[in-house]
Amino acid sequence: MEGLGINLNGLIAQIVNFSLLFILLYMVAYKPVLRMLDQRSQRVQQSMEQAAEIERRLALAQQDYERQLEQARKEGQAIIAQAAQAADRLREETVRQAKEEAQKLVEKAKSEIEYERRRAMAELQDDVANIAVLAAGKVINRSLDPEAHRQLIQEFLKETGQFN
Image 1 (cartoon, rainbow, N blue to C red):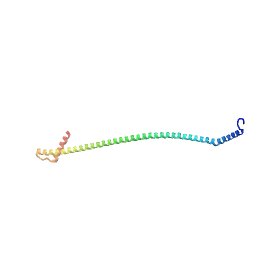
Image 2 (cartoon, one colour):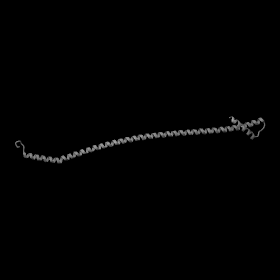
Image 3 (tube, helix red, strand yellow):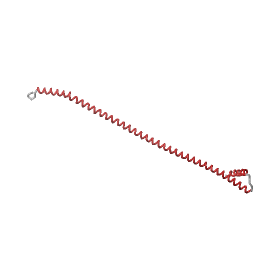
Image 4 (cartoon, one colour):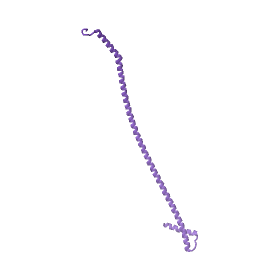
């Protein structure tokens, strides 16, 4: 082999050195590098799983937010409807009370008018009775007993009251 320019002792020494270097590098560098790459791969996988979990939670939170927003809209609409109903009831109650007040005022006015009419009629009857007594006294030229005369007039008024 020396004819080929190969030194057998040098070749064996280089093979032994290369094998020792390969074993040493395999144990010292290759395994730690592989372990580091595996750990990095696991961290990337965990990060991706965490990102997926965060996305899932975000989607759930978005759904919950939308559900709460819809519920708030419904509650707001219900509150508005209740307020409208309360306003309608208040308006109806106010109108009813106003009508009752107006009816009471009309009834009171009617009562007062009836009272005044009766009072005026009584005064008119008294005035007519007095005038009739005076006229009768002048016609017959004598004075009648006021009590008897008053009875006579009352009877006359009762008879004429039936014609009214």
